Amino acid sequence: MKRPFRILITSLGFLWALGSSLSVYATTLSEIDVSGGALIYERSCLVCHGIDGHGDGPAAFYNSAYSASRPRDFTVGNYKYRSTPSGELPTDQDIFRVITNGIPGAMPSFGGLPESARWKVVAYLKAFSQDATGKKPETVTLPEPAIPTSSASVAQGRSVYLALDCHSCHGVDGRGRVGLTRAKELIDSRNLPMPPSDLTLAGSFKIGPSARDIVRTLFTGLDGTPMPSYANQLHGQEVDAWHLANYILSLSPSN
Image 1 (cartoon, one colour):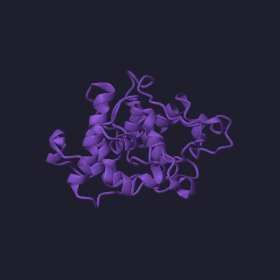
Image 2: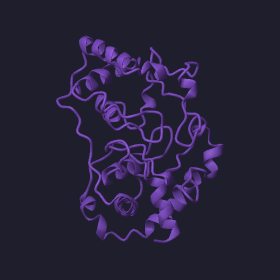
Image 3: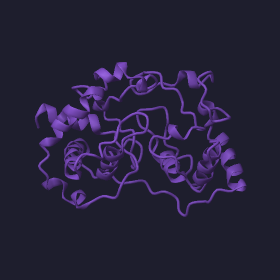
């Protein structure tokens, strides 16, 4: 595999977000000519993620959008946005969706590219992922059915929020003030400061602000960041994830 292609693979491995429906391309990835993927990276991704995928491109240092968190270094194998368990690689669909939709406040959408071109990027990442683990990623199973929001659910969610110690980072009010003792100590996998998200702002939820998006994040975690998976803590009480999501959503004035 030539160097530009490996750059593409390691730099896009984190990608995940909600998006449009998938097409037949998802079932024929191994048949796609992916040589154009490197050109896509060089033209559209290198400026932020750098030539070697270390998250050290020119925009990483000068773009104010990254003042709190620079583009991530994906050469170390941490994949932030996934539908798979913590520490696992993303699925093809995970990667395709974020390429299509982007990440609000951080990465633009590339939905204007032809769908086949976006799948070429996915195909190269898929090949690299198989080399790295030898197994197919599987998505986490979310608890069903969802629990509709209600005053009782929100109250239960607040209890879960406190029991899981979410307030030590995000604060009792969810605003994630850096003045909190633990919040001041938070760093990412590169030992860079990473302030906790303000849960009262919908824009803080990079993979979507719905209850289902929040529940998924609780079970997957955000690898490479201080946000862990709570799958073990919620084991046997999975329904509490919905209550917690309802409480978090209640913190936003827009809800």
